[in-house]
Amino acid sequence: MFNAYRNNDNNTITIEGRIDSVNASGAEEMINGLLPEGGEAVLDAQKLEYISSAGLRVLLRLKKSGPPLLDNQRCSRGLRNI
Image (cartoon, rainbow, N blue to C red; front, side, top):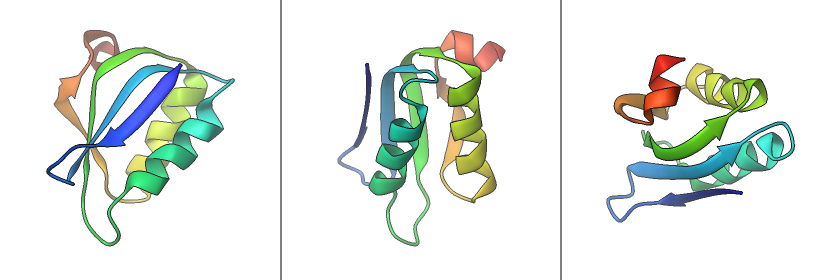
């Protein structure tokens, strides 16, 4: 299961659960829908339990398209190791 939501500060998008090949495209759509228009956002991935190569592609596409930026201090230990 995957969930994403924008925090009260409107600049942080928390992602949690799992991103794998089954839900990667839906996760990408969900995250893109939460991005503030024209503004920067930070992805908080501390609660992300699992990410497959398909999920990594999602994060890389988001990174290449500009904001949001993945904050190293706000990601799970496993994701930080990747």
